[in-house]
Image (tube, rainbow, N blue to C red; front, side, top):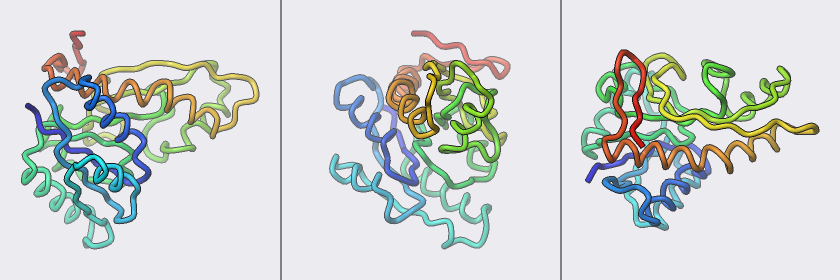
Length: 208
């Protein structure tokens, strides 16, 4: 059974999707054993507690710099014996020491079709604002492995939704979350826990 540690910063809707998937038996071979938040008041912590999942809080401002914060996070992940680390709305920067310690064992969901609308500055509503400004006709989400390059790790899964006339960033964000993010992230976690993802020369080979 693989230990899944989920990193959060906010409301935890992606965390809830993972919890629901685990309860339904969709994540065979894995269990969410700890949720670590970068904010003490994140509602994601309440979701974890309601489901009997251990929580920890590591607040960025309590540490001198990114390096010290990353060092503390790495220590926490090691203590929790993490087999998989999932970014679920985790908005705090970690340095490369963490992803190098967990190569191809950290995954993130990004609300766009990488390599579009990704990288530094593309988070939350900014992603959907950029998509609408460009006039794309489809958008979606990407689950990928985390590397030292922001949104640059090997792509695991992608799926799309249409962009409709009259969409606002908020409407588009909701459509992407409900139809893609909340489905793809648990699916990717399940594939990982069943050893169905392999990375060859920076490209994933997924066996479904």
